[in-house]
Image 1: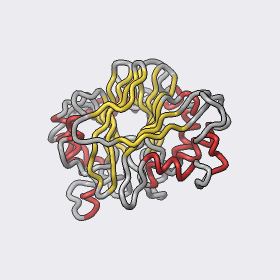
Image 2: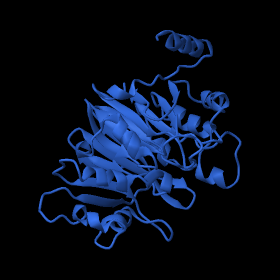
Image 3: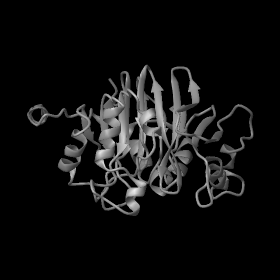
Image 4: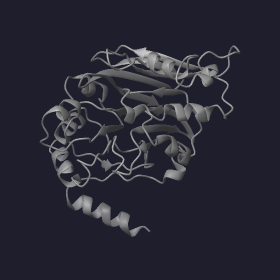
Length: 308
């Protein structure tokens, strides 16, 4: 079983790059800090991947959930995580492929022994996208889509489990919006067409992990947020050379490489892999290597990356 890893490492060295290996999904985060990719795909079902979602583990406990796209609730269960463990949920934006499984996760938590509030942070809204508080209210308030779970929105007992949504008004300078012991989360506004969107930096156990979310990479915000990060999870939703509307939504590999290289991130994971980028890994890597030479990995569902 060791031979394929040795061959991969030798090939990586000979090609002038370093490959970042994913650890076993079953033991993710047992010691230290790790990021587990619950969903490595986009909105397409044909890619046979769950949509965007990530867990940040520390010493065997799942502490942070970033996004909850379709299919990620199943991956959450497969990871061995518990909703009762989470300290915070962070949303980058509310496209379906980043938020559809949130009600499923909340309903699952109904059956767990959670006795403390669950903070939820995400972007503000606009004329066609809800804010974070609106998103949660429209799902779980008395007259929401899942009003039968409204006790989780307005609990009957003080101090019991309650969903606590917060709108984050972020600019291009990183702003810390959550802090609890050794865990904090900072955000910047990023450009994803006309959709209000955030990128996140999670600081935990002395490690720093940055999640780009969906963005075209314009502006200095993401670069500032990613400075000297131990791990940068960037979305590889479009190939190099793409133009038009999709380029206004997503950053091509060269932009990912420029941000990773100029921000001096220690390792890079590419996720949100869509049909238009699957099979183009060689060119994607070549474009990124023009600017960034650190460890690099293409994510799959349930891959686990130790943050060193």
